[in-house]
Structure formats: C-alpha cells, structure tokens
Amino acid sequence: MCDERGAVVGSATRERMRAEGLWHACGSVLVRSGDGERVFAHRRTDTKDVYPGLHDCWAGGVVAAGESARACAERELAEELGITGVPLVPLFTLAVELPPVRVHLWCYEVRWDGPVVLQDSEVAAGWWLPVAELRERLADPGWPFVPDGRLAVEEWFRRLG
Image 1 (tube, one colour):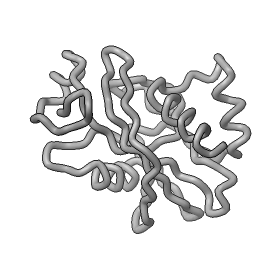
Image 2 (cartoon, helix red, strand yellow):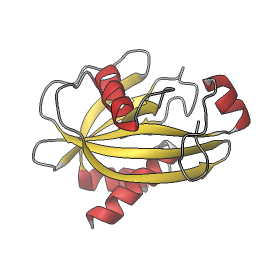
Image 3 (cartoon, rainbow, N blue to C red):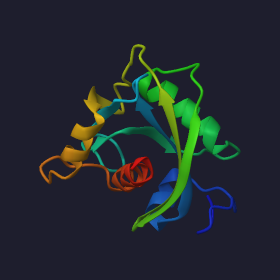
C-alpha cells in the first residue's frame, strides 16, 4: 500500500485494497517484438477480479508487501506470459485515479521474439499487433480496453511520438 505520491506506507490485503480504493503500486510490462514494430496484446479472463474480459497490452500486477515494482514486473511477466531472462527497460511511473482503482503504475518495456506461454487463469487469448493497429483499436469503442492500461499506453504513445 502506498500514499498518493507513491511512497510505501504499509500493507493491506488485496480484498481491503479493492474495497476501500486504497492507493497501491503495480509493476507493468509492455512486450514489444525485437524490431519494436509490434506489441503483444491480450484479453483478460472473465474471472479476473478487476476489469474481467477486457483487452490489455501490459503484463503486470499488484506489488506484494516487501517486493519492488521491478521484481513484481519480472514476476508477473513470467507468470502471465512465460517470459523470463530478458532485461526490463524502465519507461515511466504513472499515477492513475479511476475510483475505486487508485494505482501507481511502474511501467517497463521488454523486447521479445521468443515463445509466449499464456497463464490460463489470467490470460484468455493473446496476439501480436502492429503498433499502428494498437492505436486504431484503442480508438474503437467496440474493443473494450482496461482503463488504467489505456492511460499507460496513451502515455507511452505520447512519449513515443
């Protein structure tokens, strides 16, 4: 658990964090192809506790008590997409307040051309999208996208140019 500035101030159960809309931190990883032209996108399972069934292009999750955002991002990348042993490049940190979700996203990027192994319990389907197509799909209201992930990818696009 953290404060509105992102400083760690304690810990809370995930249930309490969600119920009370507490600020917390997440490690998030954008997976790009080796040439940088494609992004790995996925659809979340319908059983996820937050934003079930929506699309996303970030692998990630809540930072555990005593865990760094980088360690969380590495753990989530391995769990959700089966990607390990690749260096994470820091992108930015983004504070997102979409009540009841209040989160500091620690965003990283990796380049990967190897196999992707989806975690059945969290990722329903996944595929590579050209960056231009990701921009188009985000503009399509018929393609529901995770709200905090949308803000993060829009920030990434802004920085990318």
